[in-house]
Amino acid sequence: MDFDAVKQRCAICSRSYRRHGPNILYLETASGHHEATVEVKAGVASLTFYHGNPVPSAELLMAAAEAVTAEDPSIKAVVCEQQKVTLETHGLGDGGRLEPIILWQWPSLWLPQLTYPLPPVQELTAGRYHPRRPRKPTGTVYRRFIPWLERDVSFRVADPNTDLACFHRWMNDEQVNTIWEDAGPIDKHRDILQARIADPHVLPLIGSFGDTPFGYFEVYWAKEDRLGPFYDADDYDRGWHVAIGEPDYRGKKWISAWLPSLMHFIFLDDPRTRRIVGEPRASHEQQIRNLDRSGFSKIKHFDFPHKRALLVMLSRERFFGDHLWVPAA
Image (tube, rainbow, N blue to C red):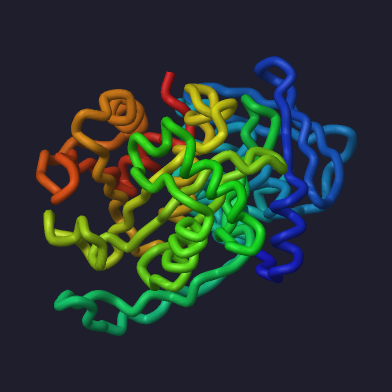
């Protein structure tokens, strides 16, 4: 694989696809437009590019395999005789077979900024030992094309200079404030954003569909978080909070895109993260149902000072083994 950062960003920003019936696939990548037939037998999808053989390209093949497996959890392998040598050369498939469980853990397809995880150097914060956390990125950290919406979902690091107005409006939304309890003046919200950016255990993100910001997300390292003392937190467990600020982007078709995509980002961001945790309010039945459909296990109820919560947990093995980037029926 070519890990040149500029090429990777170009490939991510320009990849899209659509299916015409069960057997025809149209792809648009950084290298142009491509068409392929797809034949699925016994859980194996066979790809054949037509209108001439494309130049051997791991990026093209992986983009096509992504398109085939993005909505069909029954596919256990993708094969392409035209690209067999490419697969084997890059160590992506055994005997020309590319497995979704490998494909969807390949970070360069979705992460514009490729970094190596920091070595596990331990630090002490508030009486708890934890690994030193990496320097925070800026800009877009994840982008994925959502075929059932025919648009991208992306997450970028929040910036008080450009995102404060949206964040202020969202925190004052009645439905958001019911959960977050952070309504108030714009100066309060500027301070919140700046504090999150300064906090090494929290990554504040803005989610967008296409060019439209729709919500605020916090991804945190669980061991240093308020949740850490309530269970046996692993060094690389991560949790998340969400506020969907735009009413037009609430509902099943939107959550089926952003929720698995956020989980996908968290698992890709550090390969040592084995579990994603959450602590929804125990009375928030709709959110708990959404998490249950998305593969989270209910672990236990416990009490924060401000709420009774339910500890939920999603394992890496469950997410990738059960193809949970595909939305639940």
